[in-house]
Each structure stands twice: as structure tokens, then as C-alpha cells.
Image 1 (cartoon, rainbow, N blue to C red):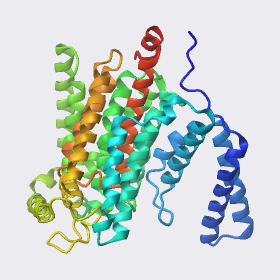
Image 2: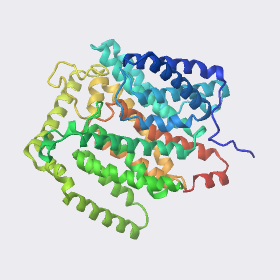
Image 3: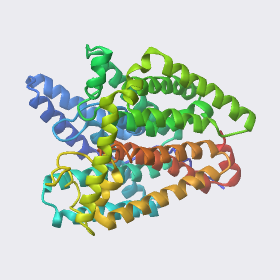
Image 4: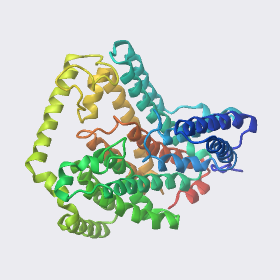
Length: 453
């Protein structure tokens, strides 16, 4: 029986691509004109934009898969981020491919997607009791980023090799970490000063220290898996420096929850396997973590657990949680509306509750919490199925670690409240779940050959 390769080139008629090329050209024209460049400059920019988009769409659509996560560090242009334009363009290409090629996978939605769409639909319905329509729109846009990221991730396996998708994770981790560390070097401050101005030291314009650390926390387990088991030699070689750079960032960044969960997650991931090897890895990693904590690099991180100012910030989080819970109780059962928490006139006004569960319960009420639980349960069941599949144990274990790291971290930090996190979280989860589903549909011998690490 002939099996069609999942990484078949995405082909579409030029007539379908041309309008998007024109849009890209006009976008370049607007951007370059807004920046005040000369006529020749924006004409050349428009021409380059059209040519680049047509080339990517016709010959290398997989480039967009790597490019979107790689552009995460860039700040927004007007109201959109460059990476948003890339992944939305990628979504358009997949939709067009579905319209012209009509594959079965383009017309089906999985249960976890339906649950996530219902959650976004409920958030959209809350416009009728939301006081601030702009904040409502921004909240729905953020959640739609996760929906589209999951939708794309589940379908990448049908036309892009898995190594391309995994390269996007490496690109995201390296670009974010190096951009944050480079920005930190531009801040001429002493270690004691950085303790008080830590967030600004790695502020990329759209997210400060803790938020960047949360994104890296989701990517880290999959980087470890690539370093351990990837069949691509260059990925194994690249993954270890990437993990080391992320570890350095987590220490220098000194986000308490992210640093503890990062090192704990790495140790937990290494702990799987035969007892003798497991004990050796745990002892080795524990010794390495202890050496890092005793080095000068961890000075700010250790002070975050001991200084009166930072100990006080832990108590403030408790106050945030109490105020958010009171907001939830006062607005049962429907909540105050999507995105309304920032401006709602109570003790928590202009303050994030630092707990996504309380953010959902206060803004989307009981239906929002129940729908979010359904999304997580369906996602966890799919991840568990991956971990039980022969040849996929390592990937399944990495997804399980990433899942629980995210859930633990979302209790104490803003995570899913950001569009970057929504996208990268569901991109990682959806991507691997999609490749696993496609592998299971192949004939047994071919599947065993393809999925073996």
C-alpha cells in the first residue's frame, strides 16, 4: 500500500497566492512610509516584500514554521507583532491548501479544539456585560492566539517534517534568551541595583523578566528531549547549548518560581529510566544545581528568597489571591467579562492577580472555569496517550513535564494572560500531538520506523 509522505510540499495556484503578495507589498509600503523613508526605499521594500512572500508561499512554506517562533522577541508594529503576521500568514496558507487540495484533516476539529473554541466563544459572549470593550477585544484576541496555535500545531505533521517543527522550538528558545541577555548587557547597573530593577533589565517591550521566563519554562522540557533523543545530530548539538543558555538566563533573571520549576523539571525529566541511570543523573544534576547556586551568578536569585523586600512580595501575592477570590464571589456566576479585571473598580484595580485560575473565575465565572478544566483534561489525556506509545515515551514525558510546569507556574505568575504564552504553549502541545496522531495512522512497520528515536 502506498503511503503519502506527511511532509509533502504545500502547493497552491499562483492566483491564490497573488492577493496575499499584494497585501504584503502594501503592508511594507505602509510600514516604510510610516518610518519616514524615501520613495525609492519603500518601493524597494514593497517589491522585496512581495517577492519574499511569493517565494515562501510557493517554494518553502516550512520557513514560516520556524520564522514565527523565532520572531517572538520583536516588539509590536502598531498593534500587531511581527510573529503574529507570520503565523497568521501560515494559517492562511494552510486554509488555502485545505480549500484546493481538500484533505480530510483540514475539515475536522478535534475535541480539545472544540473545547478551546467554546471557551473563547464564552469569552466573546461576555461582551454583553463587559464595561470596557477594548480590554474585552484584547482578551479575546489573546485567547484566539492559543486557538490558532493549537489548530496549526495539530496540522503541521501533514505537510512539514517534524525536524522543522522542532527547529522552531530551538529558534524560539535561543532568540528569546539571547535577546533578553543582550538587553540585560545594555543596562549598566550593579548587582544590587539589578535586584531592585530586575524586571526592566530584560524588558523586551512586551514582557519583562518573569514573563519571558514563563515562556522558556514551557520550551525547556522539549529542548531536553531533543538533546537526549533527537535523531538529528545537529539538533542534539544545538539543544545542549540552548538548555545551558536558558539555565543561565533563569539564574540571572532570578524569577523564583520559574527558576525552581526549571531545575526541578529538568531533574524530573532525567529521573525517568532504569534505576541505576536515574540515580546517577539525579545526583549529577543536583550537584550541578548546587554548584550554580554557590556561584556569583546566583547572587540576585538567592537574595530573592532572603531579602525583606522580596519576602514581602510573597505575602502581597496572598493578598492578590484573596482580592481576586472576593471578586469572583461577588460576581458569581458569570464573572465580570473577559479582560475586565485590569480596570474593575475594586481593591485589585490595575493589578494582575498572578493566578490564571482566579483570573478566569473572576472574569468568565463558573462556565469559564469548567470549560478551561475540560480543555486541560482533554489535553492531558492526549499527552498520556503519547507517553504510552512505543517510541514516543521521551516526547510524552517531556509534554507531561511541560504541562505540569505550566499549571504550577500559572498559580503564582501571569502566564496564559499573555498572547505570546498562549501561542507558544498550544504550538508546542498541538505540534507534538499532531505528529503523534499522524504516526499512528501509518501502517505498523512504517510507523515503527518513523517514530523510533
